[in-house]
Length: 291
Image 1 (tube, rainbow, N blue to C red):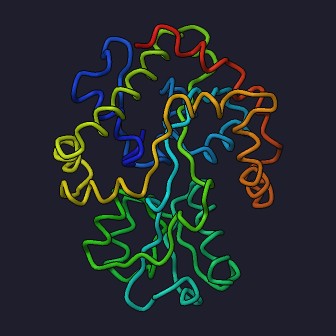
Image 2 (cartoon, rainbow, N blue to C red):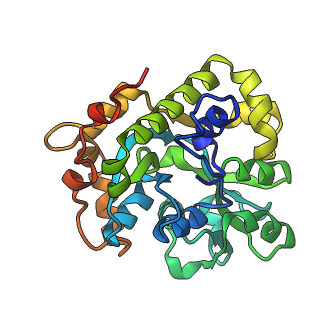
């Protein structure tokens, strides 16, 4: 997983011994681009990704299964800008830093739509998210498409939000994906991964202040700043996740139909997602043996 507060329950589960380290190893990488590279190269069995990233991965022929819906972004994905930009309309003629990911492209499109701008009316620089703050400070870019906790450091440096995921409800959803082969061969490890996630969410919600003190330093935030960042997320409960992954047709597929159509229109995916394949395992069966 990359540095994203929406994935932090897994880090919390690891740090507090809520995850069996003999069965699951949680690795934090610098960006979603790096996570996707490692997953494509076969170095990871599972990954926490956004749904749009997952659809692009599957469209490229990587055989994955979505085993859980984790969270929905409600403000934690954000565009920050310097003082010359007060709203998306002010981006005409400006330079925008965007990570070369599907969610970055999706955020950029929604941002330009909000400002009633064409792509050729701005300059886009494809940079990994970890580089955005230094580029803003240097003046080489005027705005950056970012996410928490990286966005928090930009805010503290004086850059201001001009657009966030509240303006695009349901577009940015976090899911847990597992290679189909690993899912079939090691179901108990997948079950432990899901259990660890749920224990991490429970610990974060039951002990928010203590959890924030533990997790905030890794996010480059104060404990108060970390708690404020969490307000931009909505964690999905296990029953809600199971409901989304079930049904005929799949409920998640119905809910994400608009997203899939947008990704096709942007030429980010070629085919309509095969939801029956992506969600072919019974989510209740995946959770067998969980506490």
